[in-house]
Amino acid sequence: MSKIDLEKLNIEEIHQALSKKIFSSEELTKKYLARIKQDDTNAFISLNENALDEAKAADQKIKSGQAGVLVGVPLAVKDVILVAGQKATAASKILENYTASYTATAVARLKAAGMVILGKTNCDEFAMGSSNENSYFGPVLNPHDKSRVPGGSSGGSAVAVAANLAPVSLGTDTGGSIRQPAAFCGVVGLKPSYGRVSRYGAIAMASSLDQIGPLAKTVKDTAYLLHQMAGFDKYDATSSTEPVADYLKDIDKDVKKIRLGIPEEYFLSGIDPAVRQAVEGKINFLEKAGFKIKAVKLPYTEYGLAAYYLLMPAEVSSNLARYDGILYGMSPDKNLSLDDWYKSVRSQGFGSETKRRIILGTYILSAGYFDAYYKKAQKLRSLIKNDFANVFKQVDALLTPVTPTTAFKIGEKSKDPLSMYLSDIFTVGANIAGICGLSLPIGQDKNNLPIGLQILAKPFAEDILFKLGYYIENNY
Image 1 (cartoon, helix red, strand yellow):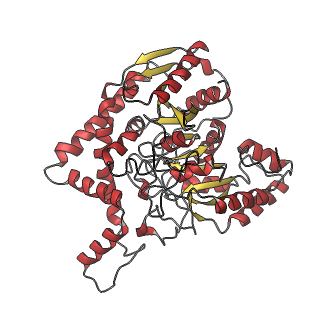
Image 2 (image 1 turned 90 degrees about the horizontal axis):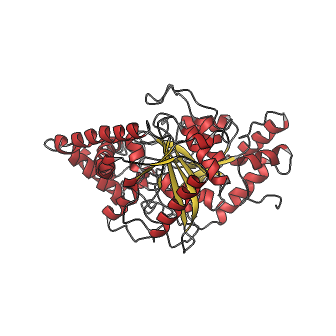
Image 3 (image 1 turned 180 degrees about the vertical axis):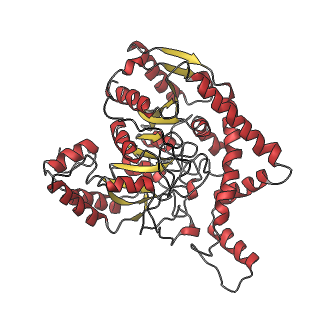
């Protein structure tokens, strides 16, 4: 290993190198910043001007013997998560020049642990998309094949890790926006249980579905980040008081006691054969290794995508009503009437996918359609939640594909929203039900494009995801 080999570095290796003074956090941060500036994937929207100062402060902590495992470790942050003093654009023209006045709780906890913020990563506008083509700042390119998408909406955060622009990153997951890009880019991505990580300081897309979570090269790295971020936050009424487990303590213990379920509804006829083969290969490996595996049913899964694309735009319509350019964001001609002001700001400021979802959500919530659509979707949400609750009485974790295909070509689905939405078919259920899910790289197809395995567990059972993910990662 060279003095600083970015391709090999994970949290524990960085910690050991910093402790042994093989390199400093300042040197490491400079190396990452230089790589970001040379990179052509468009993964970052902005860089942190104070990154080197933060790294120097981390080095001082290390010198004084206060070096926790995260001290001096660089971090990339999706640009829908606020960091005080840094731009927070949500990849939208309407917030192009907005600077955050406070820091999201999840980021604040990582900064308190000594992490160094490298900058803000590109994403689909307001986290709306499955390909990272909907950014005002241009699409992000998949480092495995730059003619293909990295997945969305946290595509920049996934690429940051996959292209060695950052050792770890933060994304948000509303319907698969961490897990799907993690699968497309060949990294590990965690969607925590709803309420496990505070949403305070995350620009809201759909408040009942959004969660902040980590992306990394290893399962252990996601566990380190979650352990630091998780826990109740008085600033977020939806954050849980459920105790936070020590995810690292027994990560390699009692793994074969985990009962595994295979939901037949996730193995549809339309799945790419390479994806099916890789996932079924992992299942066969685990069965031969002595795990108890059984087929299970989630009968309301087939309605998950329809329910999601009613619930989510309804919340989008409500959450994005606040963007009018009056307090912050872009402002038009001051002499316009109020009606013309709103038309000017919102028509110019929002991209086409954001407009599509606002219009759809407004329609769903309008008089005469609320009962026919939104209310029915909420009933379906309860049924889907009950499906998972019943299955988790029989098994501890579910194994499924993350996506039906590997990364598709840029532009391939952008003119066909329905085809794009189908990319989320295996991920939306976890958000609807509030459970936790992990995307784990398990191989590549004939084009050397990564394939992901999804592990799902009941709410606040992230320790099961980490144990099983760590076992698979190190035994196959």
